[in-house]
Image (cartoon, rainbow, N blue to C red; front, side):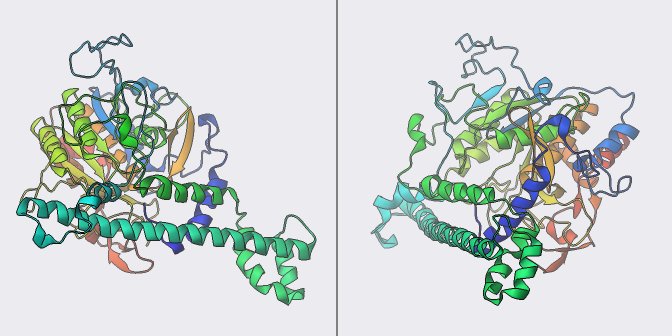
Length: 537
């Protein structure tokens, strides 16, 4: 959720560049078949692209072998279950009769045919935007603690008070930064149009070119500042629609994420800690399904239909669980989604979301331990802040407390396709203890709603690469328990421990790749299946 002023300027170029590169990549049959297409499936040895060796596994290890269907739950922001490249791999609850308004299987969810939406109500109303958790904690405790000193509280109140103070500090910092970014963006936009107009008038043209700039630079010294400002914009064909994208982001921050007067949860009206309450609906698409559809596509897009992309796991069914809004997810929703996934046969749960505070962490902890007890592996995106999460806490987390860390959990960082100093994605969180492995997460192509396709970056998309490979291994070796499966995935990672990279979150500071995760490696489907076969002999 954070963007520094410098980062905004960089993104104005980057977003526009990606827009220009991918503007024709909206239909599966029109996707550019370049060497980077589906790069996360490719091999550093065979293709010289540092993907996860999925195609190599299918070509060299799996012909003639039989597989078992594996259920993978995707807890996310909604999934287009009717997407042309995904619809054949969506889980169906055979114990429920579609759209009869009855909870046929008595599991507490009416007509849950393909999963459940935990951020809606029974009237079909759904939450799109939400506060950040720091906003919720701050506003819930503001009136109670604003003029209170710690010494006036009893021991049971002090813990909540400490949480409030931390949330207040982070909230005020975030609000200040959001307002500053909005002001910066408005000034930046104003300067852009002003300088462009000055140059256009001098050149007597509506559309200026590099030749115009070079010519004016020689003959019109008064425009030197404007020309310098505009040069890269013109050079890279800047599209002004990018301004609109950042204005939308800025407005989302101020109107929803950080707005203490915004209360979307009123449509549900539940108790944030009562796990016995029933709420939600069966609309797993919801108001928006971009992120979840993208994630599900990496795992399970049809490999054999001749359109779109090739997902990783061929014999898989996706349970669609909508629990993540545009804003921060609520602990209770995530806990209930995990339990739903476990109770309906998922062996792997993908969780591509996270936040910086978790007031009801114990609800998620209990759900994750329930998954552990039932033998379910949870795979989680490490996050996109460029943080060392050994030092900066992020939630959810495998750490139940300072002494106990659960073992059915894999945290995934993001890697790039090229084996250079930018091999570790600059945005990726990292941690020698808290991040287990890295996987492709830069310029990933996957599915978008309404039979479209898109390209995006993020550990959100590295996590489903690992989830897909976990499902692939499990489909051919279904007797593996979660400990064995996790062990195989991590031990078979291709190690790049000694390779120097720029430390994520920095511009030029170099570290060894091995310092960024437990394994110091990249996930490999080929190596994981090889190891699984050896262990099965």
